[in-house]
Image 1 (cartoon, helix red, strand yellow):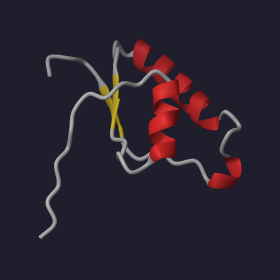
Image 2 (cartoon, rainbow, N blue to C red; image 1 turned 90 degrees about the vertical axis):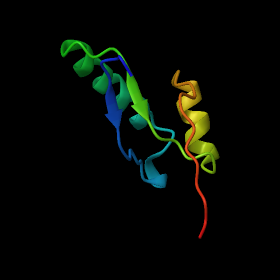
Image 3 (cartoon, one colour; image 1 turned 30 degrees about the vertical axis):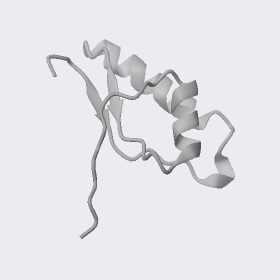
Length: 73
C-alpha cells in the first residue's frame, strides 16, 4: 500500500468486561508502541455483520479502508 502500518488481528473483549474502556486502552497502548516504531497507521478487519464492533471502531476513529468479497459454494 506504500504505507508503514500494523495489522491488528482478532481483538476480543469478553462480554462481561465490555464498556469498561478495555478496548480503548488496548488501542491507545498499541498506538503508542507503534509510534515508537515509526508506524503511523493501524489496519484491521471488522465484519459488516458485527454491528457492535463497527460502532466501537468508528467511535475510536477507524474508517472503512477495503472491502472483502465472499461467495458461498
